[in-house]
Amino acid sequence: MKSISYVFIRLGIGISMLGHGLVRIPKLTAFSEGMVSNFKDSLLPEFLLIPFSLALPFIEFLIGLLLVLGWQTKPAAVGGGVLMLVLIGGTTLIENWAGLPTQMIHLLFFVLVYEFNKANAMALDKSQGIK
Image (cartoon, rainbow, N blue to C red; front, top):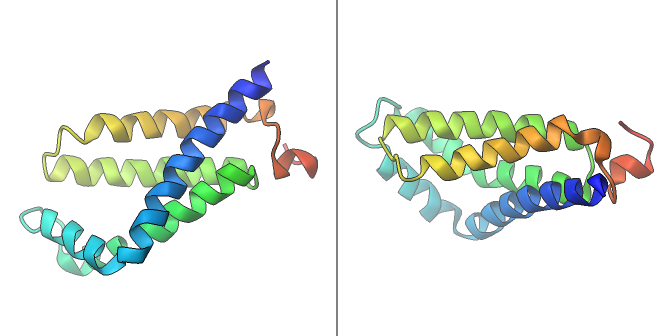
């Protein structure tokens, strides 16, 4: 029973990240410009924001895909957790307190995926005998 619960957790966060990337990649320029605009009054310089905003949808897509497939699950969870910490840092710099709880929930899901990885099932990692 723990295995199916874990699969739901892994798929839930995986589908969320995959969806974030999927909807943003086709409108990459508009997404990047919007993100840069949101941070125009922050401490972060534009020369850092532009490449990050252009890479973010692809990072989200990749992390989501790995989690949905259950392949490289632990590294994907670590990568997702680090990404969430970076996003939380940015969110606090622009005082977007309404967006913070969602990012904290995503971070918690990445922690759960990492911590309870031994229950991983219906995953490419499992079929390869990777723990």
